[in-house]
Length: 294
Image (cartoon, rainbow, N blue to C red; front, side, top):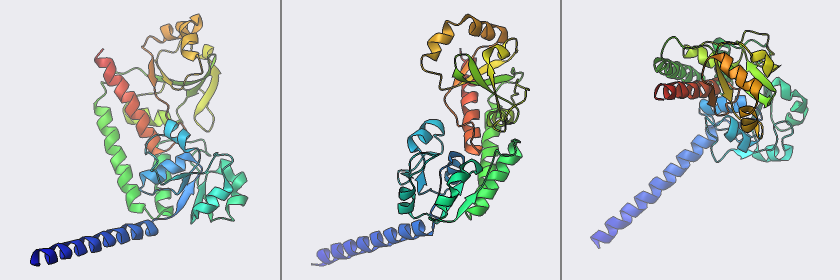
């Protein structure tokens, strides 16, 4: 009897503890801001600050291009970034919606659901590390995560520093490109996210030509001829592009003239913030380290 009573007491305690934990988790969820953005740059920053957005636009594409921080399963897809499902957003009951200026055309529809805040990173056309940290701090303020924003910046500084230590000195400059088709590329300049990432790990950018506010020039591959630099191709390549480029004598000439082995890295969101910058730096560092072992 005594043993039975003991088991009942333990069972009752377990039930009470379980109920307490569920209640605590629910309280934490209720205390978290119900926010979202259709802009991936803002979404990745929210996640990096420990805020789980209730919704995201084109979640599968986010997973392909941004990847880190990963989307948690509870974040719901609301459709296209340029034409989100307004009814779906309404059902998610966000307390606040963040947008970038280039999504301002949808603001009049979103304000009927929740207050809308516009925050931009690239509008000025000036992107350096201080702009990225200011963007992170601004989001920290807006989300009530000021301490987390400062901790995140310090954490990223340390991670960049560790990556820098893994790369040998006296490296060639990088010519970072993304193919639009087999004859035209985006070339990422000094004010690009990619450039900020490589500079943090002690590398330099070979492209000094004029760029747009997103940090890239759109040029024919003939403009790359004669540039002495390591070419970095950011995936994806156009359909059938790898085979076509391998048989293109002019592209092979560009590669030969560069004097360096071509590096190819996975897709990274070039319009991103600190998380995307770190991911690009990690991919470049991994490729550099791999070169040493070959």
